[in-house]
Image (cartoon, rainbow, N blue to C red; front, side, top):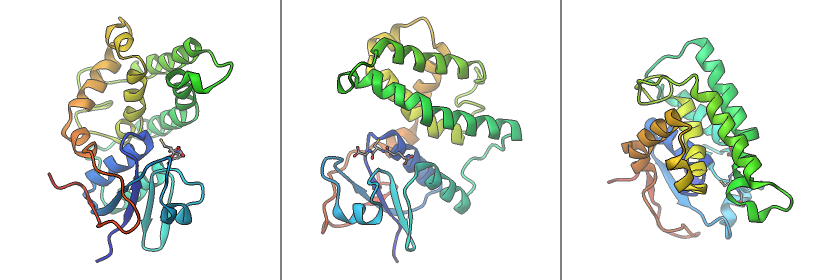
Length: 217
Ligand SMILES: N[C@@H](CCC(=O)N[C@@H](CS)C(=O)NCC(=O)O)C(=O)O
């Protein structure tokens, strides 16, 4: 049996969202943890743009994280709670906002020394304004964004919010703002799903024995 192959990087938010979808769908794959500084030739050959995640399944290359989620969704309806059309549209709009605006500002805030003439505080503010904007629509009495069932919006953007916290944990944990976001992130960080997808593995190099995902515990 040939399992799909997933090139992944443990801390990458895009790879995290893809691993969550594959885990929820219980799709067994061969996982290859890569070093971003020394990517395997076999991955670059499949996807010359060379970003993770890359899923190689039945001669098809899927090298965009959202497309990997959508592919997993075709295999199994992983989100138990049906969303209204309005919630679906809202989710897609916010995922786009995170990929197009939150992430660039997050990088300029978290890794400010890599950029010239980019104001760290300005980008922090931009990210926190986006979080304030979405907080209003969060269900304050449930574990996940819309309900107690996890959804596409949760798996797609929480990995970025985790990084936003890590840029300055002390500030994030002590600010009087973002109360809803903090609770939501906390549920995520304490979830068994997060623990399962964040198990540490050695980097894979060409010729290594296969490692399978979801990981056996
Ligand atoms: N749009 C891509 C973005 C993936 C991405 O940028 N991944 C980063 C790691 S978090 C990467 O591989 N960067 C290339 C590098 O660092 O060399 C997706 O959604 O899959």
